Image (cartoon, rainbow, N blue to C red; front, side, top):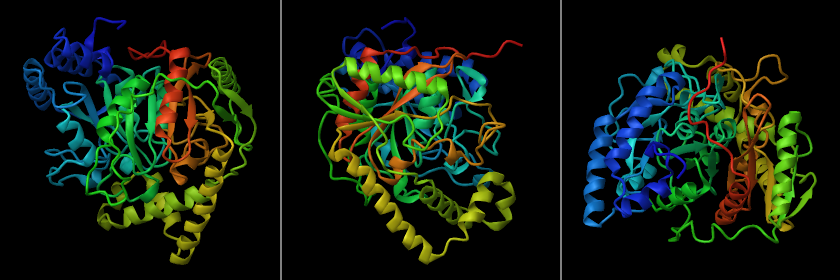
Length: 471
């Protein structure tokens, strides 16, 4: 523990302190809520804050710890839920004016139910772009998630609010969803840990309009906390027909075993991606750390090719379906960018969708073939650092859509592999750079073990406080 402010402690540290009766969940909840009141107006992490509910949950957690009967491994740990995810008693606004007037959720989504059962203290819901459609977090409700390292820059998306909350100690455990990088993009931009497990590892319900590219997972300040949170999120829920068989295990076991002897394939550019020189330098330094840890690192193009056309056609067609479910008289309320991609997706025929399924399968097979000769694949999380808020793409650059500056994330949604972003350095302007670690399907434990080894050998500072540019 490097601070006396319990809001900045990891969930692992908090639970240890509760067990030894050195700290109360009520103290922690109050500390987090105080930081939210002070900092959130500067950064826009929260769509809503439930102070009353959080304090009630903290009081219940304190009583359980005093009896020596914690409800689960995260009892009393402060947590947040992304505002695309059902949370009983609140309207899931999804960053959209079109959801105005909807009834509060009557049930919790699986991840929320599991966190409640395990005693987590839910602080509120974090901001998202409208329906999670893009890689930055601003929406028609006027919510903007600002990067804590420079509040004039984006935090990324679509789990941007969760990333900001993690970076600033506005809770210890944060649920994100990831359909094309939405956990890893903001993790990379804000310097936190974001883990997209293998598809089906974390039960997901209701089904996403974006289909079988959409995953749910933890966003935290440490890999250890991500593993701890996964212990809860990965518990079974019968509502998800596509979930993997329940695997009763503690994902922290083996976390400290290191990566000595592993074969790691490293690619700066996947054979086709232009990468900012400062990102390239941070990535090269990260590879040296992996070598020092005893891994055999081979640098070359993994040969998976560029699947952007596949992903965009998938994403845009799903957007068209999503928009079609909204009453036509409300279409004028939507983010214009979402309307644009939906119009493109609406041109896709049923025949083309079926062909697209086969193209995706062939692309996913190429990704999985990489792991016939390598235990892990590492890339930069993103080829660029965070850019100005309010933009889908950096101003003056070559990009037209968010899918073009996220070429390292969405391939592993198409392939459904586990992928983790861990901070690995900074640009000269003080903006974080992320290292992405990818494993074959179902090798979640290996991916987080490698992330923990890197994090231990190359720790990075958290933001702590928002930074604004000098006027």
